[in-house]
Image (tube, rainbow, N blue to C red):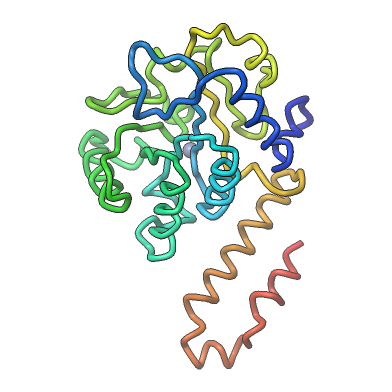
Length: 248
Ligand SMILES: [Zn+2]
C-alpha cells in the first residue's frame, strides 16, 4: 500500500489537494458535462459507508468545491431508504454536490430494467433528476454499458488512461495525482475518482478504516434497538461504547 500519494488520505492533506485543484482548473459536476467542458470531474463512489461520505462533503463545502457522489442502492452495508440516510443524502446535496447512481450491473439479468428502477428510486430519495451514473466494479463484471440520457463515468470521452486517475484499493497504480494537476493543459477533462471511505482525520490503512465503519454500524444497530426494553436490559445503555473499545 505504500505509495507517494498516500498522504492524501488524511483530511488535512485532502483539503490542501482541494485548494490546489481549484487553482488549477474549473471543477465540473458530471451532470453538467457537455462537449465544451474542460477541467476536473471529482467523482466519489460510495461503496460501504454513507457517513464517511457526508464528512468528506462537509470538508468540500468549506472549500467551496463541488463534486459528484455516486450512491449504491444495492450496498450490503448502507440502506439509502432509511430515514437517517435520506437525511444524509439531503445534506450532501445541500453541501453543493450532485448525486449520481453507482450501479452494479451484476445485480440484474437485464440490467437496463434494473437501471430504470434504481434511477427512479434514487431521484425520489434526492427529490431531483438523476443525470449521471458510474459503474460498480466494472473491472470484475467486465461490463461497460452506456445508457441513454445519462452521463456515464465510463464514457470513453471521460475515461482514458491519460485523463483518469483513481484511488481504488488505496493504490493510484503508478500514477501521481500531483503530476495530473501539474501537467493539466487547460483543455482536457480530467476525471479523479476518490472513495470517501479512504479519507479520515488520521492517515489510516484498511484496518483503521474498517474499524471506523464497524463502530458506525454498532451505533446504528443500538440506535435502532434501544427502544426495545428487553434488549436494553440485556445489553445496557453503554453497549456501543463497550463494543467499540473491543474493536481496535
Ligand atoms: Zn463501487
